[in-house]
Length: 454
Image 1 (cartoon, helix red, strand yellow):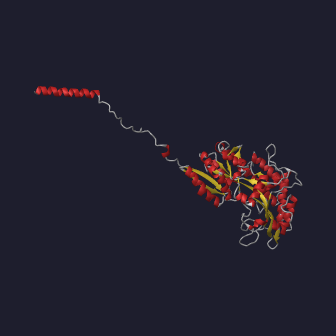
Image 2 (cartoon, rainbow, N blue to C red; image 1 turned 60 degrees about the vertical axis):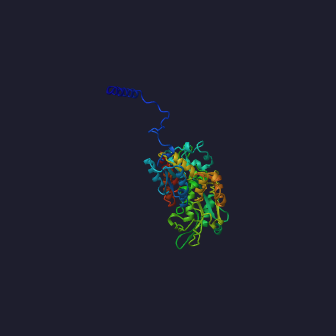
Image 3 (cartoon, one colour; image 1 turned 120 degrees about the vertical axis):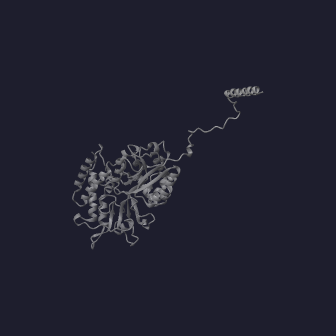
């Protein structure tokens, strides 16, 4: 029995070993498929890359900055998760040093607030934005008016223009009539010089002005280089000759400089006996001071809307808006001119966020955005289709927009503008102190500007 039982058990062990060697039969239900260990999560679940878009703005109203921070930036950040917009506020005082620092370091704001003449000054440091904002890339670019040229360098867009701010001649008609001047805004140099003598009054007790016939950009000196350009262009003057060299040795340049001196002397008297300037008042120089109720002393103002009274001021019942008419009697090429300034936002070439910068510009410069931006400042939008609402509702802005369209001359394309400004201001300063004659002034500017361009 024992032998038989042992034999049977041995047989069973052998069968079991054979079956194990042949493997187990497949099951009819496959196991559930497991994800590969290398599978990445869905793109929508990936955390957004953190970036900061930096914007540098100069001297805007608190309302403008508040609007950008409360509406434009939050909307942009919501549409671009992980992106933060950072606005830094600067000043036009010392702008050249600040901007030179950005470009020299190759680091700074992605978007920079520039002035009209700065496309030629900084063009090589600005990004070509045609691929993001040009025709074919952004259909809305066709809505921008002539101001768009100020945002180009070598024919390529470097950013977008914000507004058009021409320099007009605002005159208090009631004060003109009180001075015995009944023919309206002067139309030539001789009329301006006669008006300056007739409508300027001096307090003999203090030997200072109590009323000034014409106040250009720089009220105290009357020798501002931008006012010089306004007068020069009104004579048909060109900054550069056909060969590209400066044109300050032209008859128009000499006549402009002589006019500046004549107006200065008709207002302040000779340099050796010059009277004191107007006292500083509150509000526009051609408005009334709310604190005293007295006029601030200006009869006519050659400046942009920045310096004019607020549009809701009652004084507008007596204020006219005109171009500067030149001197057609002596210069047949004279023409009415409003010198148009177009501040704009440019994208720095060193920026690593050019596409993001373009997207922010598209939002801030939409039809509604460009309208709102300028409404906070009372200026004319650069976009033609944004010139509605407060523009057409305001007789003043409507008049300014019409004059700009008909007589606007751009303040752009000036080579080495910062150097020219310095050269001209120094020379014109010596003109009004009578250290240099008008002939010596234009010769000095010509010589120094030629050297600056080499």
